[in-house]
Image (cartoon, rainbow, N blue to C red; front, side):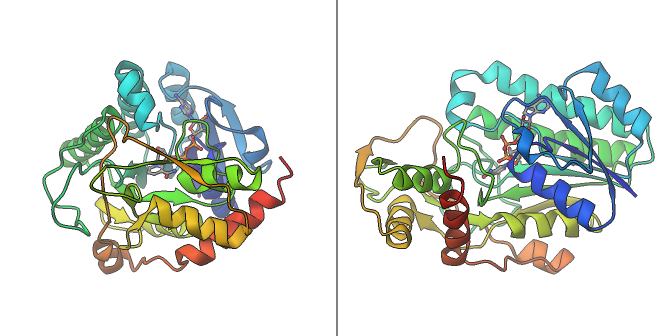
Length: 310
Ligand SMILES: NC(=O)c1ccc[n+]([C@@H]2O[C@H](COP(=O)([O-])OP(=O)(O)OC[C@H]3O[C@@H](n4cnc5c(N)ncnc54)[C@H](O)[C@@H]3O)[C@@H](O)[C@H]2O)c1
């Protein structure tokens, strides 16, 4: 069995690569190192330094003929997508379409897409949310992830492409980089360990910051592996528990025993107030549910950053 992982030098992609190799699969990576890190690249994988939008990527897929494609490569910063919507559309839209078009030319068993549960829904009154509500993303990044899901649905319906789109909450854990201000746990962990003040973006009528569904990396990898055998469709991958930014800060401060304080700032454009994901569909369809609670996940993550010696 062979799998191709786009973004395999990144945070989530590199953990997928490691698990697939552990499970005995042959693995090919395509990554242009936009935010990827060379120390994340598993030496047992075959690595192509390529952009997912390139013709060369299309040709690599036809040559390698993977059984599975795990597509994690993306522009994934909300603020950057607000400033640069064309770039976001190009990487996420055209890049994904290029991979889908190549997938139709080979005997692919499954296309597993890293989507977002964090920003695809927009503002919702009822939380935790299920997958089948009306989607009104409020930032270009969420719009392009929805575009990709719609392309996948179209190519399944009309051309028989098997796919699973996994809508992750806020993923955290070892190897997360904070290149684009994503990953608040990583940002706070690094800042507190360097004795630097943190920032909390908050609404006047919602002190403590945004509420998010934080899911630990190994649970996300379990979901990707389980999705290899799932029915085609879209699934939330979170914990069904909401945590606000201030409580993250407090927990990290308690674990590290470091208190730096934080600055309170107004919310940034494109950021929704609250999102919590109902994960019962993934449980019912492919028997996945999260195993690591946030305290445990943060302790492992903090140990990792402490030992990085940055
Ligand atoms: N981390 C999260 O909390 C989170 C939440 C929801 C969804 N996601 C999705 O999961 C996926 C992976 O996120 P991550 O946190 O691992 O990010 P990451 O930045 O660590 O990894 C992305 C990888 O994709 C590569 N890449 C980017 N543009 C590329 C291009 N044009 N061609 C080839 N490679 C390219 C980067 O170099 C990097 O190695 C993304 O699709 C993201 O939208 C992540």
